[in-house]
Length: 357
Image 1: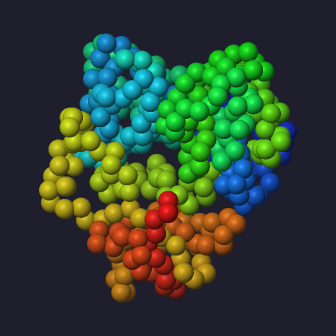
Image 2: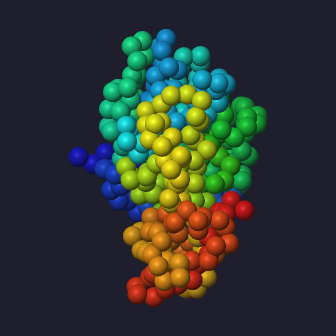
C-alpha cells in the first residue's frame, strides 16, 4: 500500500511530479532539479520529508538504552542538542544512521530513515533496557525542511523566535500564523544552513502555507526528492541503503568520528578488531575531470587495477561536473589522489576531493 504525507494534495496542486519512493507518494521536482538545486544553494527551499520516521524514547533507563545502541556517546549531550550517529548489528555493520535530539534528562527524539523505520524499530526494541519506554509516532508527524542560506530569514518571519540557536541544536518555536508551538531542529540534509520542523499531521498544511506566505520575498520554492539527492551527494552526505547497507562499518565511511570508544555499544568489539587489523577501504567523494556521469556500481580504478566501487553519482546541477561517492582502497583516500572511473567501457580520469572545501 502506498503511503501519502499530509501534504500530498498540496504537491499535486502546485505541479509536483509525483512518484512512489520507499513506499511513499512524493514529488521528485516541481520545476527542474537544476533550478531547485541552485535555489537551495543560493536562497531557500522547502522540502516535505514526512516519510522519515519519528521515535520518542524516554524513561528512567532511556540514556542507558541509547548509549548501548548508538555509536555516539550520548551521555554528555546537552538538553536541546542534536547528534548524528550510527547504530550497528552484532557483526559491526551499519544498520542505519539517524539524528537524535535530547529533549530532557531521560527524553529523546530520533528520526530514522524512511525505508528502515520498521527495521530500526525492531533493532531498538531488541536492545531496549527495562525502564525505557519507546513510541513509534512516525504516522502522527510531518517533517518540513527549510534549507538554504536564507532559511533563518524566513523562519524569523514565520515564528516569533530569533532563530539564533546554533547548528545541530533544537528548540520549541512559536509559529505566529497558527499561534502554536512546535519542535524545530537546526539541521538538514543539504550541506546548507536550515531547519527541520516536527509538525503534527493536522497542522502541516497550515505551516507549509505560512512558510510560503512569509518566504515570498526571499524567493522561496518547493523542492523535490531529485534536488534533495543531488544536494546531499555534492556534499558527500551518506544515503542509507545506497552508500551503506549492511556491507560496511562506520570506520569505512567518511564519518568515522561518529564512533566514540569510551562506552560500550552493539558491534563495538568488531570495530576494535577492524581498527587493530587496519581499515582496508574508505568512503570518498570524487570529481570527474572529463565528461561523463558516474553511476552506482561502476568500477573505480588506479593504474588499471580495480580499487573500488561507485555507490552514488550525478552531474552537479549548475556546475556541469560529474561527481560521485564510493569506497576505494584505503591508501587512495586523500584529496588530490588521481583515480579513474569506468563509464561504459571508457576510463574517465577523476580526482578525490574534499566536498566541504
